[in-house]
Each structure stands twice: as structure tokens, then as C-alpha cells.
Length: 146
Length: 214
Ligand SMILES: [Zn+2]
Image (tube, rainbow over all chains, first blue to last red; front, top):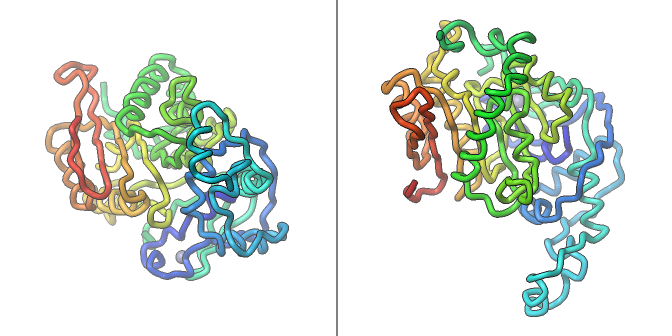
């Protein structure tokens, strides 16, 4: 399971959904793996404003990964030459394929290539543990918790 | 032919043998692929998006979502998460090393993602299973309501979902679309090849109002 996914998953238990602590779920006993995948710059630009950056930092720190910067990058930080003025950018957009910056490559590595292979995800509100096996999280709930 | 959802719940029906049969049948693969492309055309995505695939099975639709625009996937390659209640089906998806993240989950229990997560959602030949109550503590109405309620909140404003499903009859078709509308969706039913044995029903859902012109 990609760390991207963990930035969107919440506890599935109905009574928990309204509790702020039901997001993010906290990895425990996690075994990580890197699964390389093609850079998808338009996707990164699309998803960036939807990321919860502080929660992403919490998770990377809980996993013992290098610290992320305190503030999220902007879209223009992701594209090589992205700081150029808007007019120039518009003229170029016709033909030029956008190149990812190092910031974009780092974000791609963290969100899309860093995966939880085995372990558990624990809800900060109710303590329920969701098992992750072979990268697949088990979100089936016993009937009384639905 | 009896309908599988009338015999057993999907986690029991799609055991290892059935899952493999379903996944390797070239006829089913072709139908699934056609329906996925149809659903994608109804989603009108123009850029790589985050998509939820409900009832992703062995990832037949997901493989299409992961393809670039040049290979016929509008707006692709998309990033997708897939959920299914059958661990045998997910096992085959794992063997195929599909790109999407997989979840073992029952759509009738809800959708565990924070509000505004997805650009779009897709579901191929799955949601008729929600109309089965598998135990006395559950009702089809309750399962449909949890599913559509969770789906509605997990989509971003302006997002869309397309669910192809096999309604048993007109009543079931109505029950499903009413449940979606009750959850807040703008809903339209679209039928391809109506009246034939190849009839396909698509429930097209929009978030944030707006009528469908399909
Ligand atoms: Zn919880």
C-alpha cells in the first residue's frame, strides 16, 4: 500500500468517522518496500492540493523516514522552470513536455513508490487495527462494528 | 442461468476456482473491458486522476485505468484504489502485479476514505451484490445507504461515478438509483442495447448537482 493511500484512508467504523483522530491511520510493525513506478507529473500536480501535508509528515516520521519540509510544495515547485512568468509558460505549453523537478521526484518516491508491505494500521480514535498483508489492507468489519 | 448473487455472497461465491474461471474467460474479459471503456467515456476525465474501483476483482478494469491516453484510456494513466470482498479475486490481482492499491472490504459497510478523496469512481458488475442481505442484522436498504453515503462523501465536488450493474428487475433498478439520490447524488440511468440479452445498465452519478445529458 502506497503512502499516498494512507493520506486518504480513514477508520471504517461508523461511530469513529466523525472523530478527528480517525485520520490518519497509524502504521505499526510496518515492513516497507520500494516499488518503482513511472513518474506521473500531471497526477502529482492534480493531487497536490488534496494532500494533508501535516498528516503525511506525521506518518513519514512514525515510519522513521527522512523529514519532509514543514510546508508543502506548490504546483510550480514540481515543474522544471515552473517559476517562470505565466505568459511564457502559456506560450510554451503547446509543444514542450514538462520536466519534473527534484522536489517532484522526491514526492513521487514518498507517495507512489514507498509502500507498506506488511503490518497494521491503527485508528487513533478507537484503536481498531487493520491488518496489511502483501500490501493489501483488510477493511472487513465484524457485523457489530458496521 | 442462475444469478451468482442469488446463490451465495460474493466472498463465498468467488472462491479460488470461480475467481480463476472469471478472470481467464476471454469472453468475460472482453465484456469487462468494453464496459470499463464505456464507463470511462461517461466519466470524461481529461487528466490523470485518483479513482476508486468498487468491486475491482482481479483488476481487469484497473489495468485499463493504468494505461496512458495513447493506449486508449482518456486522461490516463490514472492512479486507482480497488476494493473487493473476495480475497481470491484480490489474490489474482496481486499475482498480476496490478498498479493500484487493493483493499479487502465490503462496499455495503461503507467507504473508508476522507471527504473529497477521489476525482471519480467506477464499478463494473458489482453493486447488484449490495441488494443481497447476507445475514439477519443487515438489510439491502442499509447496505445501499452506507455504500452510496460513503461514496458521495469520498468524491470531490464536481466528481463523478459510473456503476455498471445487473439489476434483477425494474424494482431493483429503482431501489439502487433511489438510494444514490438519497445520498445526495445527481443520478441518471443509461441503458445500452435495451431489451436484448446483452442489455447493460449504467448508473451515472454526479456530485455537486448538474443534470446529465447522456
Ligand atoms: Zn476507529
